[in-house]
Image (cartoon, rainbow, N blue to C red; front, top):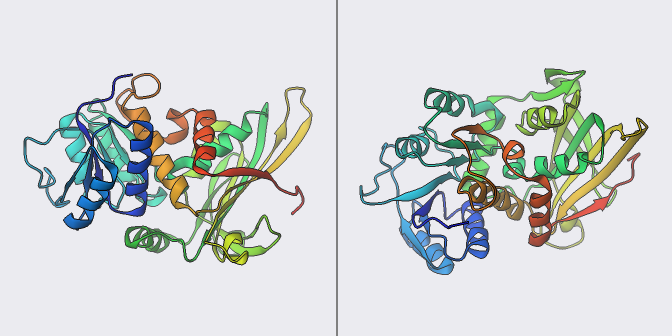
Length: 338
């Protein structure tokens, strides 16, 4: 494993997700050069100074060259923000660089997919606009490995209303909500849009609190369905007070993962688990980005081929879970009937 001599360009590197991912990459790979791109050059310089072996720049997302000097060289591009003109992707493709994005969501990935198809040999593209940049999907795939057959996957996520991220994260949530109020589920093997009563649900918190929720259109649904062959997959999402705040602490992160299927002897089994983090959603979102770039750069695993990838198609779920626990995340059992 040889770390690249050219830097990873992090668009939105001063935001919660971008700065958090940069900090993890610095911890894992101390010599990896990083370029922090932000609208506020003073803030970008502060993030870069805190990291060490990092530089700060401002970029222009209306330009194909991002407004960067021609002598700048990079090893990969992270779009840790909504790149509405796909200039970051164009910049990466023009230079044959791996690219990772987290803000497109299920409703906005079509332009990225088509751009990747038009230039399929240019470089790998990792579409990580899943919940927490794919961390939850990877956790569910890891838990599913004890099954021989998966019949149903149901995810119930709680986002604390004080933990919706910075301005970029809040804008993403608003944009996705504007695009569609329907949820996407897989039901009896068919991907189906649900709305109204069919979309409404409840999420049971680990402390017993029940929050109103609804099915959402999120990439985790097709990713989990196609990774596990589960004919029934649903992702329900609740926004409200988290268990951490109810304990008088900081907003916490909580996702319930329910799996039903059969073991290798053909006997029916079910598991219910919570993935929790006392520090909220930021650490797991940052982790998803950092894991993706580590893999795209060949710092772990074989070289990644050009084309379109997703977190569960590219990353080892067991390794991802190991890294999750290092960040302070934990898995706890959940009552099966709640």
